[in-house]
Amino acid sequence: GILTVKQVLNKLHSQLGKDGYTEIRVQFLADDTLAVERRSPDNSHSVWFVVRSAFWRDRMGDSLDANVLELDGILSHLHIAATLFVGDKHENGYCQNQQCLSGLECFLHVYGSVQEVAHTWTEGGNSKVRLTRFPPGSVLVFSTDASKAQQRHSAVMKLLAAEEIYSPLFGLELHQLNYLLYSCESEERDRSNGKRGAYGVPGSG
Image (cartoon, rainbow, N blue to C red; front, side, top):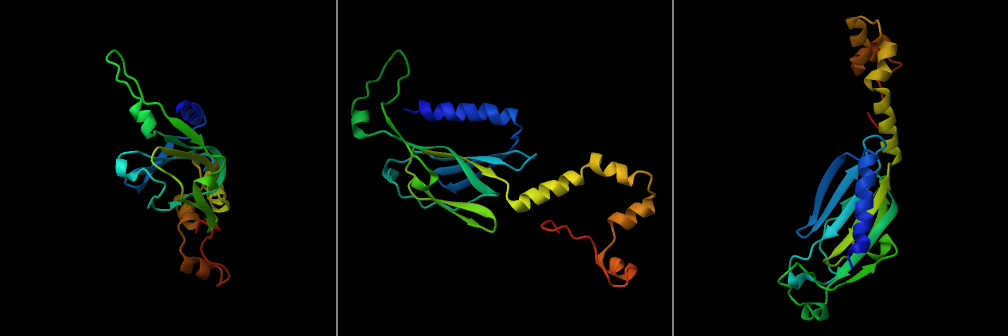
């Protein structure tokens, strides 16, 4: 039953911790559907865990009125997509054990691609996901790679890290630092006779 999914989740949980995926974000797509992102601040790669819980018996179909999941990056790899089914025969065959906890028999269906459970498309350099076949008891786990805009932003942030900017700014006086770092558009235009404006980093402002 659920063992196949648990093996994937346990392996990912261990690996992501080792690889520094320390940032976590949570989105509610519907009242029974949750998306959790684990992100690496070093390379902007993420792993998404999307789950739909079986809270209500009258919501056991495939239909789902959920928000679109907007990703900061490009969907790149499917780890697992599956649905755990518990039918009437499983419930009818359940026998309570007074000595220990026992679960219901079940059937796990594993999907071969993201497209079997969701519609995906790219917009503005980032992927979007709309769940289409995702009944209660479903899980979807996938990775995203950084978009080109994120890669540029990450490169700029590394250049602005303290250890990177210390050397070229070493020995400058306070007024010189102010000139370099805090000049506004009109000041730069005035100093250059209108030839250039303030700093502009493509994709970052």
